[in-house]
Image 1 (spheres, rainbow, N blue to C red):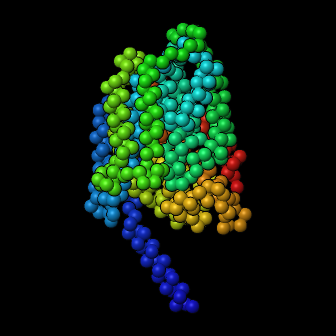
Image 2 (cartoon, rainbow, N blue to C red; image 1 turned 90 degrees about the vertical axis):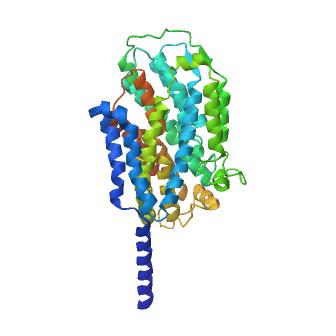
Image 3 (tube, one colour; image 1 turned 180 degrees about the vertical axis):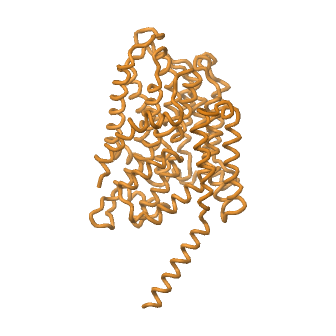
Length: 464
């Protein structure tokens, strides 16, 4: 018996050594930390340098991690290629939605009031579940700013980011990338809305109520928009067809349509047919755009340029952080309660890309129930509510609900929590609207307004 225990200990030790061999050193997280600090402090303390050199900083820090993985990590080139595929998929969707929506000019013939703004934010939250948070944000941010011209305050932009750019997209796999990845893995399409609609209602309606109180206190300001009769006009409406093509193309994936051709496997390229379609749609939409719509939206490529450069740095530098977090989650999943999954997934989704964060904690929670993330049938069992092996624990669907809510909702905590956040900030800044810097956004808005709602959601649904 002692010999068997000794052999088991040796096997476990060998497995631990093997895992460590494949894990990056902790110090390799420093480029990611440095990039976050520079994103937070650059616009505030060294604005001129940051404005001209942020692409070099992001790419340079990303290159440090990429070189280490390419030359010193076993299977590092495979990891880099997988990250490149994720980045191309990410930027293809974000850029195509940005360009197509830039050619749609929506004019609302009404002055912004607390009630009108509240209804517009609610409409944006619903729309985010149909065309994604990026699509809804890019479509509505400019008309939202126009009807409030002369009375816009920083909180108007921040609450738009909270509701339309993040939490609103929490009901469908189309709404936000983490939920779409869950759908690709096997989570049923309508599972999200069936489980998350009550937290969604609490967060969206609660934040809109707080926003309307702030908006009433802000007063009418120096109104520049006419009172109007409420009519809505749209210029460049043919771009809605392009928008439809992009949404349909999202589902052109072998994981959704069995047997659908994969360019990655056929040609060994880091993109698929979906990304090719999105790129073609973006070019066609821009070439055929209504010039009046582009002019009315003051369209330019600066917002998407900023997102493209900063996120290529974020995607590259966060590779070791995600691997270390994923390893920790898989090793300690058995000790994680719903509370820990909720808060850890949420906190990391605010500073890391929420899609891989979702996948890492999904894999960890599946392991807690003895299930495999690579099995669609087992993921469907997990979503349906498998019994926990731990006495007194909740069923598996509560874990999935906690991870889903946290990965989407907590993306509103920082500007880098979700791609539309940065784009909305950039568009507002170009229009010379007062927008908070990275740190002010967190301490002045995220902590006092978002965190209390996240605590309420935890107490209501995940405090087991």
